[in-house]
Amino acid sequence: MHKPLTALAILLAAAFALRADVLIVADEFPAMQVVAAKLKAEEKIDAKLVSQNELPADLSPFTAVIVYIHGALSEIAENAFIDYTRAGGKLVLLHHSISSGKRKNAYWFGFLGISLPEGEMASGGYKWIAGVTWDLVNLNPNHFIMTNRVHYPVRIVYSSASAASERASLPGFTLEHSEVYLNHVHTESRTLLMGLKFTDPSTGTVYLQDRAGWIKPAGKGTLIYLMPGHTPKDFENFRLMGFDGILVLDLKQKTAGSLAALTRLSRRVTRPGVSLPSGADAE
Ligand SMILES: [Zn+2]
Image 1 (spheres, rainbow, N blue to C red):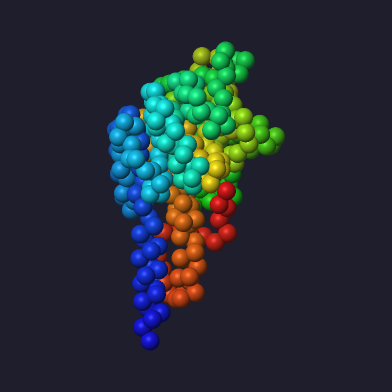
Image 2 (cartoon, helix red, strand yellow):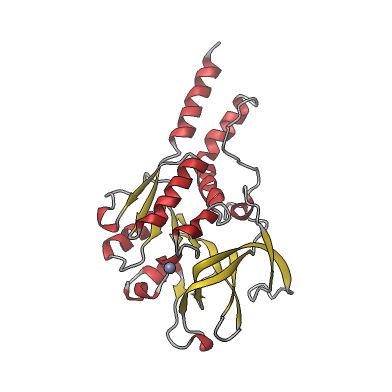
């Protein structure tokens, strides 16, 4: 008579146990302390914050690994991140995880399907510009990451080169005293999430580039890139950057079987704090 209840308890325990910690690997810590605090306060997720010299031997238990490395990316960390992702992990790359200093890594840009061309910005060369204001727009309003508990404060006039779309007013947000990266080149296709709009104050040139956020499969795992992150203040836009969707999406994939079973056992079970819409795009 109590069997269904026992089974339910076991399944509930399994579903929650799967919500493992997130690992943050950084070389500048104040911004990542903001992220860790938001993960705890808004997502009830514990984050372990380490430098790349302190990487755990096994990354596989972590629900997601967040990378925020400004300086040189060590070969050991590079390989650990690649192996973790290919084996099924979720690697969240922030801001300067794609930057010119990583050109010298043997595998990193090839793994990401990225190149940063040398040369003048006007002729397509990669360029970083700090201390500026720039906008991000939602390019993918049907994607789970871009919709889950995200409410953009403004609309921004934008036209997407990739989609060859008309000029449109898209939902988005603005970063001030931040840093923008121009002319990221994608050498492989991926699902685009966010575009950037930047007006170069020295020339008046307006840059519209579909490169501020994306998601891409890699082996059995997933790569996600979010361009914001120059200062701790950028991460006050934690939810607008899609963090909630990224982390819930991960939970959804790992607990899909358990949750289906839970639904069959009891339709009265609710899971406070976790929103799992059906039919979400899991790409
Ligand atoms: Zn920066």
